[in-house]
Image (tube, rainbow, N blue to C red; front, side, top):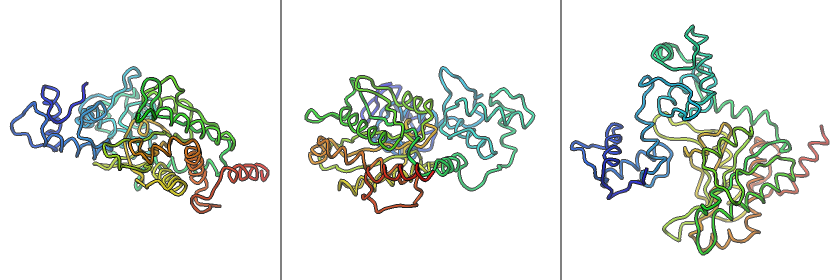
Length: 382
């Protein structure tokens, strides 16, 4: 669908207005087809609740989230469809309920996938229902009657924390997906001939080389000539059985004064907001390492529901390394030595995550040589 913003007019706008009204975000006593200021404010409020970019513009991600928000558990039958997976708030509610009852439906990402289907079949079998993996009226009724087995904390994120603990402090053998943003014909942000796609691919290759030196296996989601969409990148990471995903981007702003680094992890704040605790921890460590090493302004770590964060089974973070629209950031990003410093900071942050606070050093002081020595010493000790 086309982007919808303030000043637009037509049936698509009327649909957006009706959805916002149904969600209680817009008072629309006289339905209209005009995208006016109240609609923009309502869209921004919705985007903020859902962990989307808060720009007041209805693009594909916001439109999909608006559509998904209209579904409640029980409104329609739910089942796994490989060609076109079912999405919606009703799917999220089903996943959350299964998790509460002790069935591993994976991350409550609102998409009915194979893991959700298997968890549902297990529940149906245990409850004496037809184990067909379809969530119809009988299954919904049973789900609502039972008391949760898991209280306090989110089971899927507790499992995520346990995986990190069991993985141990050693980097060798860990599989990391490095995701340089954009690619192919999509150059991302481009200012004065400097493109996001080229910078992030080079940063990814620098990071890949450093990881290889520590014994890690690093896989890139793209090369110079292709540009998978976020869903394809997430599927690649899932099929590869990744331990972590690091998505690399730069930012842009209409103001040339905007500057700094920000890191994003999976999470939302509206309704029953959820946050990947491991993702939040890694994002915070990355922020501290890059800021300490580069002096870039600290723009913080934030929860978002972007597909690359939401659709991956393992912990994923997205790092926005500076603003190409800022002359100072752009000059530094164009310097290979600066990108090398950023790559080392990201690698050290990953190491700190697996150290779990043990044998730690002050932020900004770990080096690649330190990490390699740690890996060698660990291997000899075993």
